[in-house]
Image 1 (cartoon, rainbow, N blue to C red):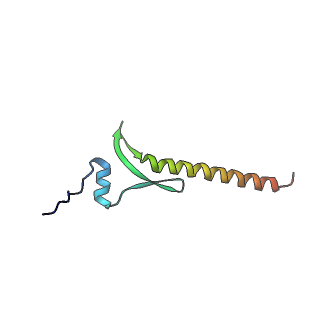
Image 2: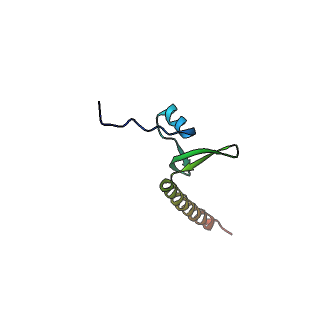
Length: 82
């Protein structure tokens, strides 16, 4: 016998995904992959809750990407003759 506990199984839709694919599901937010923390049913819809720390990183990256894109648009529009 070993002292290790058997791996904990998650229930619900997230547990089903973990059982089926044996890897944690993620979603793409912009260019960042964010881990799924929980999936549950609400008013006939599957609600996906994302890990807060990963989501904070993804939002920060989206803001930086938006700022960079805005600067690029301003630089190219400033080059055009009036």
